[in-house]
Each structure stands twice: as C-alpha cells, then as structure tokens.
Image (cartoon, rainbow, N blue to C red; front, side, top):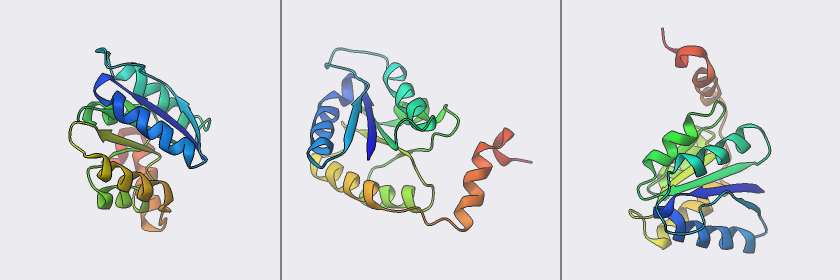
Length: 148
C-alpha cells in the first residue's frame, strides 16, 4: 500500500516509528515531514498528505500531532479526504467499516505505543462495508454537506 505520513513537532517521534514500522511491513511510505521536534504549524505537513490521498497519488494517509484534533481538521478541509481521529482499536475499525476513512489522525500525547500499533493494524486491514454507508459518504461531498 502507498501511504503518506506527516506530523507536527508533537507527533514527530511516533511519525518516525510508524514510518519505520510500515516500511518493515512492505508498505511504500512517503514522508511529508516534519523532521524534528522543533515547533512547526501542523497544516503545512498534514494538508499535503490529504491532498496526495485525495488526488489518488497515495492509497492512505496518516497524520499526527499532540492530540490529533487539528491534524484531522487540516486534512478534512481537502475535498475527498475522510480523516478519522482514532483513540482506540474500535474507533479505528469503525472509521474504515462505516466511513471508508482514507486518512488516520493520531495524538502522540494521548496514546501509548501499543495502542497505536493496534490501531494501525486494524485500520490498515479493515475493509469498507459499503451498503448504507456509501450514501452517507456521498453526502459528505455534496455542497452544503448534504444538509437541507
């Protein structure tokens, strides 16, 4: 799988570990930075990951920060990006089954490494269920978010 990864300074350590783990598992990983724990602005590193996924250059993307909230928000500003903030294996599984999440956001300050590995394992292998969920995903891309 072709996977993009990007983080701010607060997600840098996990980004490096995830990049290594994915490469060891045979994935093609494109690193969008950052390259240290020096303070940076997360949209500069997370939005390009989402743009590459939405354009079809990558199959999936992972963005990281301290909490993962801002990183998910930055990614979700890109049309075609469906970035899920995961905090457990179950939240990651449901993001794939029900939402066909093509990006994953993680908060380094809120998750221990074992949980991150579990989230990654499930998120990378869980298929999208389709069915009733397809209609809801189409609504996300409609002008106005499918509202009345």
